[in-house]
Length: 165
Image (cartoon, rainbow, N blue to C red; front, side, top):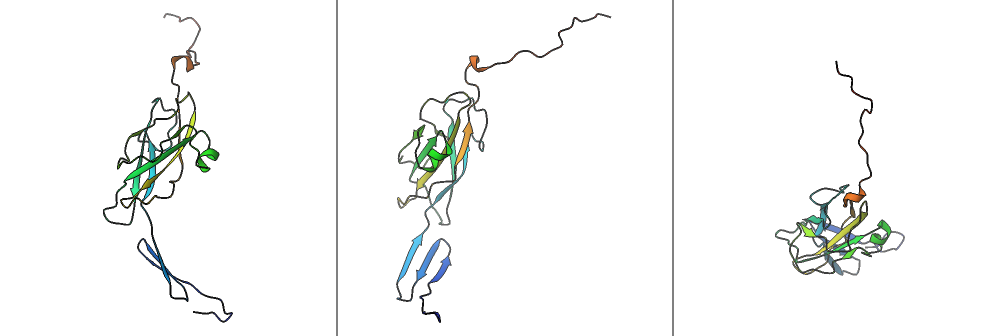
């Protein structure tokens, strides 16, 4: 269809996860959204601080509008900075594509983690038709004190002598 100015108008119809785009030429294109990872957790917590687990477990939920959808593979990226993660560089861990339906308690297998280290991560999955999702929104965790020598503290108390009554 043409507008008074003569430009072509495209019609966008949305029905569930299926998007149809029709143009004046009559061609129709379709794009079904793949499953998407959401609700990222580390050790069953959202963006935890002070983890004392050297190999934390990562989990995510799968969101899809398609009935019976499942994950066929995943890829986890863990980076030392948000900028590296945004550029898809897992300097701490890049799992590569792992053929697995597991999305619960995936054990971190990257570089050894250090005391007070902040880690940023995201995941993408492949659906039952082997279509990749977009990357998830990023999540993070911060390591706690991992060695006895990391503790720098003294006892707090009253140093005066006690007076017996």
